[in-house]
Image 1: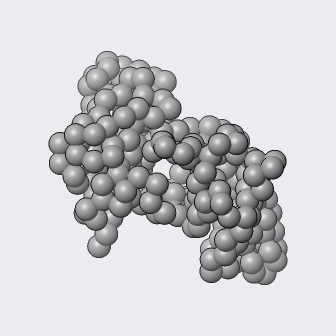
Image 2: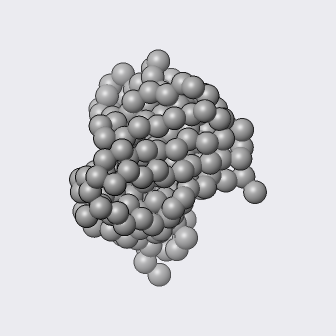
Image 3: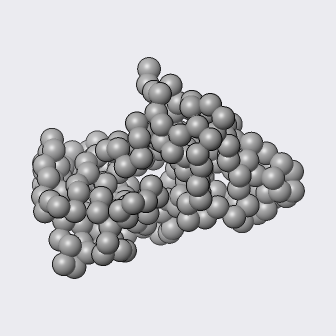
Length: 113
Length: 112
């Protein structure tokens, strides 16, 4: 089944404790992206990747890191999480940038205390 | 999940009626627009897209209209069904970029 998977789905952590949210797609897509979703703000793009070893900042990259060493994986790293990073995070992929359909993962709900 | 919808404008329509969801996009130079549907507890799902060289595009039961003069995008859903209840987002991209800018969303409630 074609899908985007994220792990973990739920995470509660404390300020400053490094964490990684994994994202994987099995559709051989070139473009992958991370978004955060907050009440009243819609989805905001954190980082995106055009292909392996090609990443760039979205609108809200501060406090996040990404890497794209393999085509299928695009992990999101929070080196020192803070409470303002409490949010719902979505990973997405598409065949290429600006392709008609972005496929979204199920989301990761992160709480930083 | 539900918490992301707390501050959203809501459109309530009777089952079987047509729905029109509006979006004011932010940048007059944007050249590609997409509508997404997000059901409770799920990630957004692509509905339909349109490029700036078009005014209208139709899909199955959905039509997107683009008015570049006033930077306005609308999604029309014909014969609205209970399964259409969700939050709807528009998104835009600028030429030469690979970033997506999403609107804040509209909640559609279908009344039986």
